[in-house]
Image 1 (tube, rainbow, N blue to C red):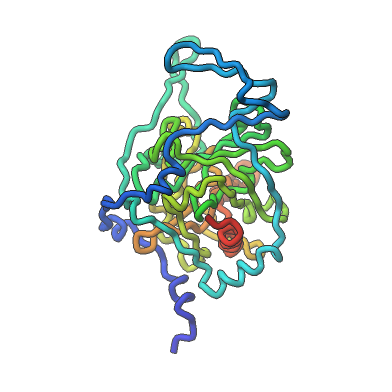
Image 2 (image 1 turned 90 degrees about the vertical axis):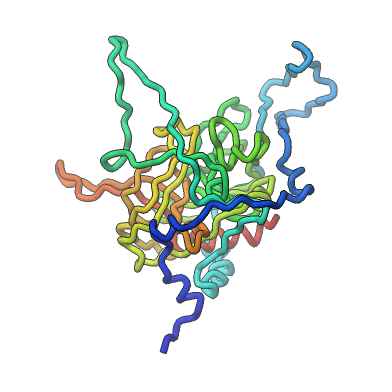
Length: 380
């Protein structure tokens, strides 16, 4: 007799392998996004933030020609929308969410709105490359922090679920004209993005973050105005040097998950180790300069190490700076579920030998609880 609950049975089922995934067909939706939702993401807006009171009506515009304007802004003004709150959460603060996850088999469902195209097989495209040369004309070979040949594949995000993966731009001072760093993240709720904890500007009082889903050559394939600044971000109140806890959730000003869908999440099961089930997607600078998304599919998790309810999942999927915060995920019946967020690399050496050289993602029950907490506290 089987004493497990249906949720527990479902939680132990492995994701699809490459053969099963290959049988999925791309599906074009014949529905249109509801007008009231389309207005939220249609067009482009310009945000002007100032440190002191500024009367926009009194600003003197300078006209260049019929369709080009310049506006003089005060000193220290920024063209971003600053964040509001951030913080680290204790395990007790997400305890109720953890209890809900445990009853549901540690599984949070994904969402694809009926008007969104389903495109498990996106078009594969070429990376953007820049050939660098020495002063004597010799070509410089770029360095890749990968395992053997770089197996990452650049793709065009034209439909769900690939349009849920996006680029994150981070300002530790919103008055700066350029972001301080960038990385990756994924929509995982109506207005929630999952990323790595070290992507966040901890300690800054005048920070800003922007999430651009389906970022491709400077804009979103979903539309030139499709992006959102981050109003709040939270991670765990733990030793931030432990990679298992290197996860954070971002609250978006605009609920992009309502209009474009989002991933689900599952608690990683060690019974899945060794299976070629997983995908890592993101925006590494070493591939297309971070301007186009890339992915590596069908690789195994080699090991998992626990730290309380958090798990470090180890793998040899290729990853370099810019991949941080990208989702580690599998497909169940064609639907994407994240099991971790990419944290970084780990190398163990003895004398001149490398004993272990892997990349690491942060996941486990702690990830599901954090996502559940965010979905409950940040509804659409």
